Length: 145
Image (cartoon, rainbow, N blue to C red; front, side, top):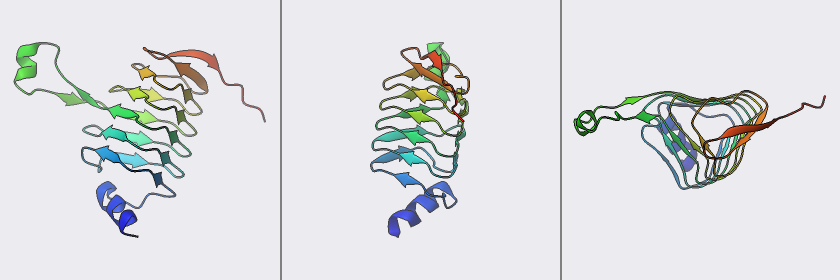
């Protein structure tokens, strides 16, 4: 009960059927929007300077990092502490393998599987299997109905 109370205070709402394995790290918590039935495995870090939206039925493997911060390439500007944050959006029914890194401004479409160790630098279209560094689509998922 205490754990759920802390999570609700951190996020600012009561998540619906969230399983969050410790340790979990984030910057604010209040900029993380979780759908229902989300599983976040151990040692994940959500850098929520920008909005992070995670859909329903999303599985996030261990040691994943979602990073919204963007820093200037010019060192003089960077040394002044200038930065901005871009949102990250993960659609419904997505599975992120362990050690996946998602960079600022990326959207991962519904139904995707992102292979372990991938670095996602660009949007991934729905129902794709993608992996690598940089992450690229390797095949489309055929939905069997």
